[in-house]
Image (cartoon, rainbow, N blue to C red; front, side):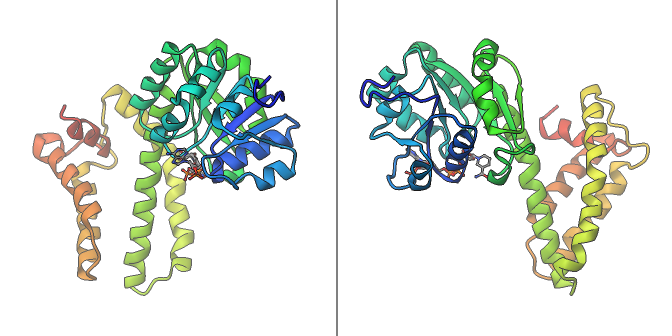
Length: 296
Ligand SMILES: NC(=O)c1ccc[n+]([C@@H]2O[C@H](COP(=O)([O-])OP(=O)(O)OC[C@H]3O[C@@H](n4cnc5c(N)ncnc54)[C@H](OP(=O)(O)O)[C@@H]3O)[C@@H](O)[C@H]2O)c1
């Protein structure tokens, strides 16, 4: 129970950006008493209209519940809130689940800070956009003490979707997040570039999209195959050697630049593949790039 308000909640949400507001709404939908706080006032109107309690300060917010879910832009922002003396002191013996995104090192550093201050800490990452929250499509990753995760799982389950505990290392959720964001952003960059090149050739986005989806459908089995190949270090190029792949990369560069379209991303991709060939691995598959870019 909060010393300041005399009220108690099942969960507190700190950070009411698009994602934080959606998380708080999902807790309310599940019938959980929810306290909310945001640095900039006024972002909680819809939530308080639905029964959420607006805390007047972050220390009041975290003191209201045994569990605080933090969802702010990054760990500089979560530090700015959690490491205020009054907040840290109110958190002693309580649990923080930090669902803000950042790099693995920041997750580890926050877990160490939490341990030093008697704050029970789980790190996490949200892998799907706001409309999925509260539905079966939401994907949450968690890392940190398993016992703590099991203890708070029933409340976290109110957010819907699948929750996966990845291990005790607090940085593991962030490590997965970074790798998955790497896939997402390079895919988005590739598709956006493709739309620009197609447009320059008089092909509309609507005309290209069904075929783009065909390319996307090829990827899931390749993800599994490439993962096995990389784990085993086999880099099989039997069906598609990198010498052949590299020439199609050059076609993208030339076609783009003929239209004055920046092809620097594909130039980098082509350059990495050419380094593989130059090192005598031309008959290997594309996954050999993973070795070359890590200096192996
Ligand atoms: N939106 C999505 O679809 C999505 C999907 C997956 C993961 N995520 C992750 O979820 C997190 C939150 O995302 P979001 O969509 O809600 O929007 P966001 O723009 O990433 O974060 C906005 C929130 O961060 C707060 N904030 C920023 N700087 C702060 C500071 N110095 N001190 C305290 N609070 C600060 C903002 O407070 P003010 O209102 O005061 O500025 C606001 O509550 C991010 O890490 C994002 O990567 C989002």
